[in-house]
Amino acid sequence: MNPLSLHPSAEEFLSHLAVERGSSRHTVDAYRRDLGKYLAVLHDRGVSDPALSSRDDIQAFVSLLKDRGLSPASIERAVSALRSFHSFLVREGLAEENPAGRIPLPKKPSRLPEALSIEDVERVLSQPFPEGPRGLRDRAMLEALYGCGLRVSELVALDLSDFDLTEGFLKACGKGGKERIVPLAGMAERAVSGYLEQGRPALHTKKGVSRVDPSAVFLNVRGGRLTRRAVFDIVREYGKRVGVELHPHMLRHSFATHLLEGGADLRALQEMLGHADISTTQVYTHVDISHLREEYLSTHPRAGLR
Image (cartoon, rainbow, N blue to C red; front, side, top):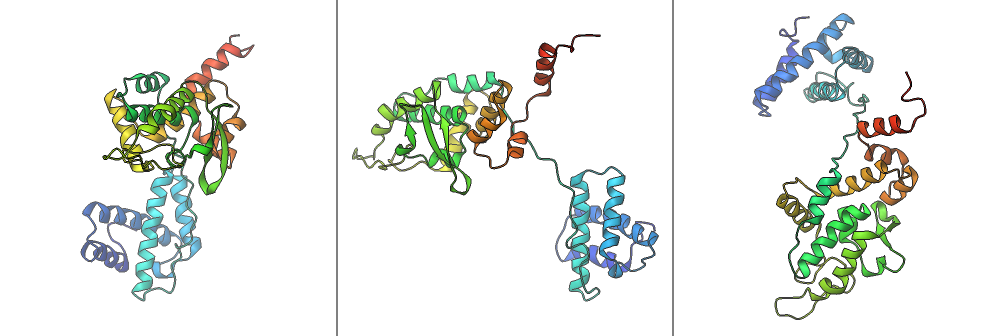
């Protein structure tokens, strides 16, 4: 079937997209191409009216797209077009059901978070911070995000009772209220200790009357608990100062990536990150292949033999 000469119901659907839904010409053209391929498959399977197509016909179309090597995203777009088209047919009374409604889509590969290089982390954390309580707070926040691999929600939820500075640990409350113990050491421990001793007590109201949240660790200038939005803005600003595009999740991912590249055990890393499933950690802590190759070449007894 010529994709430019579609079934009347398909032409009606495309007109509906353009006129009633105000879809762009680009969107309508993309739907036209997808529907043209789909109707060609139906024609080959002896189905002359798309209103009579079945779930098997949809699956045959998806299989064809897979065989042609289309990406999961392209297949998802095409199936989305079919779902909209068949929903339109049902609404218009031209079909009784939508055969594309429950078609499983190919799983998209997980998008890996970005990680900073160790050099970029050093640039961010070694830059001069402002004098005073806010500078101490900001340094402690950035050091904790990278040094402990915390999520933003976990950072702002920290209470004083969550710290054991003597033993070098903190308690983070992750997704689903699940608590975990995370090591706090080195520069992160020093920065947090300095802030708790000298920065946090100094954060107060404009009148100078202390109204510090009795439990919150990271405070705003009015003494209240710092918000997620504020943390995002603060982290972005410190990245901008040294020419690094930065957000808190990058620091968490850099923590995980650098530990794994340094030889950390994957199970231990899973606990520190608070992942319920090890597969999440495996994707999250993707390491540079060049690093793995260097490790292989330097350690495998037969790697250098020819």
